[in-house]
Length: 163
Image (tube, rainbow, N blue to C red):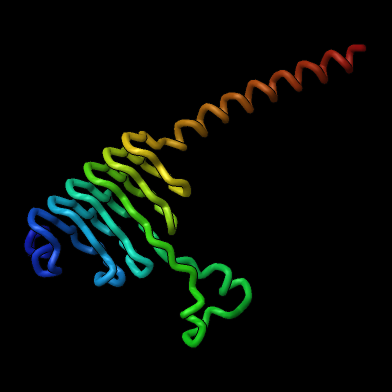
């Protein structure tokens, strides 16, 4: 089955394609525009409500979550009869976006139109239109700053030891 045939079988809109091993949880709560591409191994959790605009690509191994059960787990309460207590939040990804994989979108995040999410991202905050989200790149800058500070501290220690 081709990506387009798979999308048609799942009832996705015109022009959508979905790769093998991609999964949609609670598809009845998914609203998705035309011409979207969903990559291999992506998981779209729509249990809390998921909206994806037209012409958006969800990359390989991207996880988009709309529910979170961690509080129930740490209390030992994540049982079938307590599933109604799972936190669910609507999540949205705008039109003309590209979410590079592997990345994670956490529950409740609202991503505007024309956004680019860099690989290895965890998106935990809302993003306005035309955002290029690349926390990994920012982290590399912090690593460089930390190394420079370590060198300064080492120099200061050496000066103190010399008296």
